[in-house]
Length: 259
Image 1: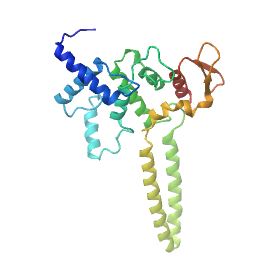
Image 2: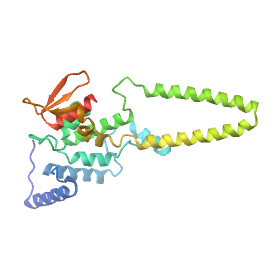
Image 3: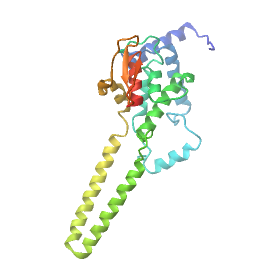
Image 4: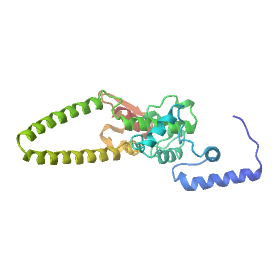
């Protein structure tokens, strides 16, 4: 790794910044090292050089998409959860605990494994955090992507049902003038239901993905237990077999992957 010579004064200032960041963000279960403090300074420098830069790297074609989404209000392309808050929480985690305690929170490597992030061993800490957030966002946008459940097909079937009901209402309108008022009332109620359904969908857009993963041990308490052999834990798999796990982080990863 390349080295950089700095003065004692600069070293003291970096150490003071590290302590300040640790007090503000680390909490009792994480730490902030000098590398994190330097990364923070580099991020600040990037923000000064380009105040309008995106929070995450984007492809060259994304600029046009961003402009279009801005013209339409940005509601359709809004992230399903607060990426900045997720990045802050993940950045406070250690990349890999050499000898983790079973009750310690998951490290970044185990979280990435739970989200099936590939190439994680070759990533820097910042790249690993971004990859985890991208994977969580993709899962929130299509939670059934890993199974054979096509939500678009189900929505198409619902639309056909609504069309049939509309035809029946139109027939009633032609035969009875009072049916007009009833149909209008039904349409208003349908609009309200659609709006309410949209609000629920927005609220449940995946903001709790990370929280749900952290509570896997409680949610699936009947699927894992302490083992009697060399391994500390056993996890029951859907096919009826059992797999051993060394730490509770490994248990969480197995539960997330299979359930």
